[in-house]
Length: 183
Image 1 (cartoon, rainbow, N blue to C red):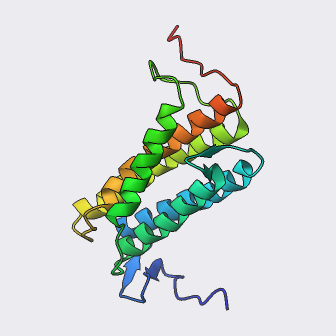
Image 2 (spheres, one colour):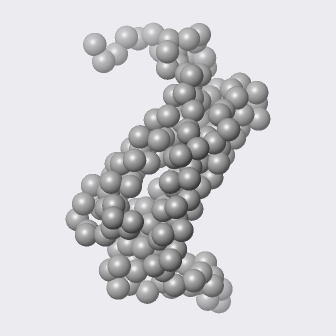
């Protein structure tokens, strides 16, 4: 059965069936924001399938799929499960960022979001990743959970990875980046 009614009073049980917590708790807020990001990345992944963009021999949609799997680890860890992002996942994200940056012109200013549909969607995902990172940091600062050594670093790199993927989408599609003129 999809519904149980057990959360009708504003409480929920976390991954692993632990104690009940408020749906408004910092942990619930972080989990919901991670879920929102993961779902939106699914939308980005479907859009990426319409493009033929690869980096380091891997298609963008496969990179996004791997990110989704890693976010499930962060979600489980945030919920209290004995899971953590491994160093290899952090290093892989860093290598991808470096590989993508080597294909792009240097950054000289902020850019106005847009260009391809894929770039615009990934840029929204980047902002969701930043919010998710802030919520996960809030969980750690509240002392509700202690996360593994690489989990917060992965969340920090994730927005950089998404930023470079958005730029790559525009670059490979022949769309120039536009900086704001502040006028």
